Image 1 (cartoon, one colour):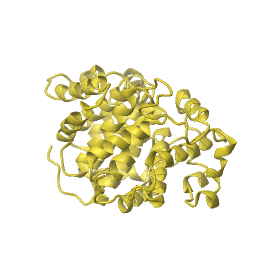
Image 2 (cartoon, rainbow, N blue to C red):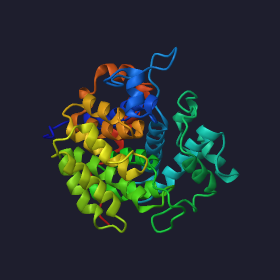
Image 3 (cartoon, rainbow, N blue to C red):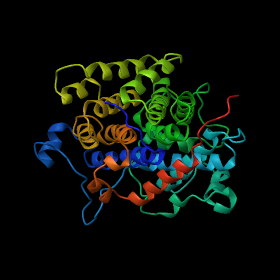
Image 4 (cartoon, rainbow, N blue to C red):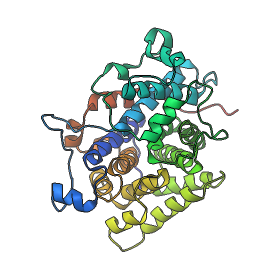
Length: 360
C-alpha cells in the first residue's frame, strides 16, 4: 500500500488514537481463543467497540495507560531540555512509570520517589493521575508491576548494558508509540530510544529490541514510507544489535506470510500468540499490512487465539499512522473511553516533536 502525504497532526493522532481504539476492541477478548470469541460475539467475532455494562464507552486497558504515561514522561523530558541534551529521556519515562505504578498499586517503589506525586516538586503536572477512572487497575502483568516496585531509585532501573531480569513479555511495546512519534524525524534515534525505554523493565534483548523496532517503524511511516518498507528499513537497523535474531525472524516471517495464499487467521497463528514482544510486534505488522483499511486490520488482530489487546493495539498504531486519524471509523472514536484525553495527548506530542535533532 502506498503512503499518502499527510500532515504530522493527522499521523500522530491516527497513531495514538488508532492504538487506543485497537486496544479497546481487543481488551474484552484479551485471553480468549478464536472459538471462544465466536461463541460470545457470533461467527465473525468482535467487530466493534463493546462498552462496559451500564457504560457508554469501551474501556482501554493498561496498554493505553502505559502509552499515555510514557508520552507524559517524554513531554516532561522535553520540557526539561531533551532536545538540547540537558535531559535524558529514559530518566523521565522511568519517573512517569513510577507514577503509573502508583495509579495501579497506590504506592511508588520507595519513599524517596514519592516527590513525583507532588506537582510542585516535579514542576510538570501529571494530569493523568488526577483522573481516577483512567487510573483504575487494568490487570497489568505481575512481572511488570513487581519489576517497577523493585526499582528503588532513579539510578537502578534497567539499561541495555545493565540487565535486571530476562523479561521479554509484550507489555514493553506501548512505550514505542510516543517514542516513535517524538523522534519521527530520525528513525535510528527512535529505535535507540525505544530500546532504552523498554530496557527500564525488560532486559531480554528480544523485549527491548522489539520495542525499538516498533518505534523506528512508526518513525519511518511518519516520514512517508509504507509499512512494509518501514519494516525492511528497520530490519537493517536491527541487524546491527546483539541479540537481534528472534525479532528479525519474527518480522521476516510476518512479511513473508503476506505472499502466502493461506487465510489471514492461519497466518497469524504462525506468528505465535503475542505473549512475547517479538510475537506481538509481528502479528501487529502482519495485520496492518494484509488489510487495506484500519477496521479490518484491528478486527483481525483482535479475533485470533493470541493476546488480543496488544496485537490490535500494535496493528492500530501502525495503520493509524499510515492512514491518518480521519480513516479511523468515527463510531470507534465516539465509543472509545477517554477519547478526548487520548486526542489531547496526540496533540501535545504533535506540538512537541521537533523536526530534527542535532547530531552529536
